[in-house]
Image: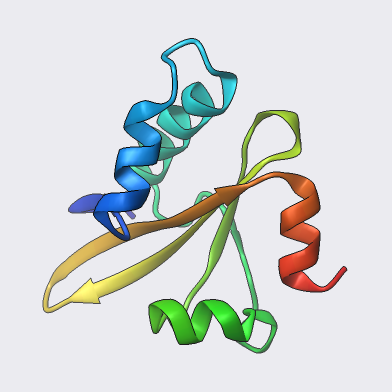
Length: 106
């Protein structure tokens, strides 16, 4: 399903993204992820509702979580939300594998 738009969860995260050097493989991976998510909201791996970390639910008030693999073991976390008839993906964060494992308790 094609999205109406994709946004960062807040200005701080968008600023961090914009400050990454253009040559950074993570930035290139995020750009590729955004393009792929815009074309197909379900391109990432869906996290079952009962496995969504409580910290993310409390912080972002999300009911869905998707994971998109980035280069070098990094992960992009996003949620798909419906606003009336508009479908929007919200980039929540990206993190290295160590932080990803810590967040999910692996």
